[in-house]
Amino acid sequence: MGTKQFKAESKRLLDLMINSIYTNKEIFLRELISNASDAIDKLYYRSLTDKNISVDRSKLEIKIEVDKANRNLIIADNGCGMTEKELENNLGTIAKSGSLAFKQANELKEQKDDISIIGQFGVGFYSAFMVSDKVTVESKSVDSEQGYKWESSGAQGYTIEPCDKNETGTIITLHIKEDSEEEKYSEFLEDYKLQELIKKYSDYIRYPIKMGTETINSMIPIWKKEKSKVKKEEYNNFYTEKFNDFLPPLKVIHSSVEGQFSYNALLYIPSHLPYDYYSQDYEKGLQLYSNGVLIMDKCSDLLPDYLGFVKGLVDSQDLSLNISREMLQHDRQLKVIAKNIENKIRSELQNMLKNDRENYEKFFNTFGMQLKYGTYNNFGVDKDKIKDLLMFYSSTEKKLITLSEYVSRMKEGQNSIYYACGESIDKIDLLPQVDTVKDKGYEMLYLSASVDEFVVQTLQEYEGKKFANVCADSTDLETAEEKEELKKVNEENKSMFDFMKESINNEVDGIRLTHKLKNHPVCLTSEGELSVKMEKVINAMPNEQKVKAQTILEINAEHPIVEKLKKLYESNKDDLKDYTKILYAQARLIEGLPIENPTEISNLVCKFLP
Image (cartoon, rainbow, N blue to C red; front, side):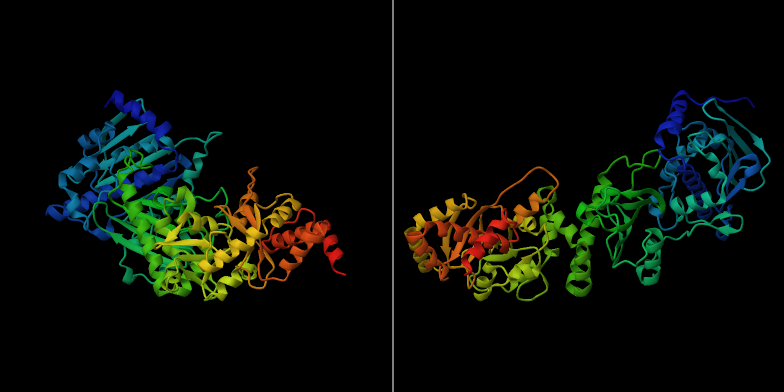
């Protein structure tokens, strides 16, 4: 029989597939195995309704053989096979999908429990030409006594002729290309490489994939088993093996969803940060399967950034794949699945917080920083999703608490959530302003992480209660009488404070007396949105942008230093300048800020010591 030509559009598509569509040549084995599984599915389905077809399901299998001497790779199945006409239609016309037509004709969507067609696109067969310079297909249909051989060396055409084949099924023989400088095709003739590709892409094909007598694939995915029948050790072993972790996960989330888009998900929260988590090399994302066949190793669209530490996979039978099964034609399904997964993870974390506090605190100590970043990332778009998962150190509980817990025990009439910032819990506890707030019986949140203040400024409020920095001018704990008295005293000493401000080169925006200090003589108070802590964080960033917080040097109105300052203003303004420099340096040191001229301050302290 003479050589038949592919149709013009099929020639163009074949060329496109070989050179463009498939970005990864190793995908060819996935496609041929999926098609083989598809053919076995068809035979099994036919046997359910056709009494003339008898199938021993235990003997259904896919075989992979290598003939190194002749550079042949053979993929054989005992599925339904193809007639001469089907070979012509399915392999001669690329745009034809026998699997999809079969699926539509038999309305298999209602038969999901019994059978499913993995090979949505018969065109995946042509990926064989990426690694082969000749492909031979020997097939005998369950509906035919005669077997036929289809053979092609590529776009130049193909032949179909009768062949001797006794058993129903299909044998595909790939003549693997010779190696080139760019490509080492010989690796596809190595057992270890083929086993690696089977485990990677086709591990959950439902029929045995055999090399010799050994079955290479697992067949039944762990995520398709009933949760009650999967032991903790199985979940953990699957995680450590598939996701290359040396420690078991902190939490396993296994869910099966039926609906507009059905899918199974097996998700893991690691027990520790990956070593490269904050590097450019780290890729977030979940493995994406379509009916047990791996489509993408890292599908980043399935996870929001703030949950980028979650590992796992999603397997759906409802994905719209393109002809190479490498990309999705439409992302609407993915968006729906991603939203559901995000909600599921958050729900599980909430349950952990409520019912397993110890493990949640372990989780938060490991991944809390990522949740905090997520709160203000993208202009705070996710803040309401994250706020109930956040934890901060409590001044009264002496441990991590949630915002909900803080609000639940606020004092009657308290309208603000008080917080203080510093480099560490111990340093925050020593801040002058903190003493006064504690004395009045208010609970405070201690914000020691560099991102914490950005978080509360993004949130602005929680359950109607605004956040208030105890080191900011906006914090108001005084009575009306105390305010009026302080205002009067500050006005009386305005000229002295102006002089003091000039003596430190107007480094602060103002100097005044305050009632907010208990025993401490001075403090720096922030005005406006930018606090002293945020100034330090922003200025430490690797860019040229430098900012300066608006600050007030506040002096304890009840401290003996006030009378000393007044006397110096009347009798010795030079000493008052030096006193002011020392007080300002003292306030900066308390806030953890540097002093521009420590030698000068040291000498001034020595001047007043005798």
